[in-house]
Image (cartoon, rainbow, N blue to C red):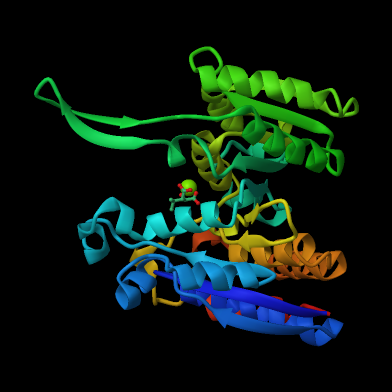
Length: 361
Ligand code: IPM
Ligand code: MG
């Protein structure tokens, strides 16, 4: 197969971690007889530096022309980076939101798995970590507060800011269907997370999710309020299979879920639309504080590349090989600093990528 992959290395640790994921993809191509054409795309701070804006029309077009896009991370230190002197609509994050919207990537899949090998890095009590967990967070990605009307104005002499939270039934239905489809291939349970005791958008969310559930009689549906969900994630993460939620709640809960896996450096993600196209990126940020030091954990990006093989190219065997290689390197005791624990062997970004790619067979 010939894969046309757009690559957004991005800012901070982005170029380092993407380099390792490309190394692993190249090894997969070599071993399994595929070919890859990479197109480098600029987005975020790197694009501001060159083009003055975080995403150009040409980049969006080039992304659309690829089969899939592999991305690192974007953004910098809000206190020190000149990017944050710009208007909010011209900052790095605005590029990411425009890319998500422009490609209609409404379904964001964020798997959070506690590897046996990393139980020691899990910050939860031993009796909870011992039970393990394997959940998929399905976050709606092109609606809600992120894309509602916003503004700041003076009302009766008082500075007032407003961000609108809107969802229509079609937006809810399409993400709910995705969640149930994925649950059918996993543990057949969907926990739909909302704030229906307060928000109208959440009450509509609940109603539509219940309608969709009727087409999936094998899947157990439960509703959970978002505050309770935040608590349950640290109390009993093993109870979850698929968590279905709106944009903002999903942003917050996925960071929490990643931390209980031991490190945000382990969490992959895929953002999908109605086609086979997808944008694949680690859930973590650009970590400007450790950029360029060669110590960032590339595993989340490598696992995102595995998701790309699976969801955009239907190469399940190749995706499994990448996941297996990651598990093997961890079981040999190799760790980047973020997941380091006593008795393990600490290695840097490049060596982690080398070791994982040498396990692809
Ligand atoms: C994420 C990030 C982004 C988001 C930021 C960088 C805009 O936190 O992908 O979770 O809030 O969606
Ligand atoms: Mg986030």
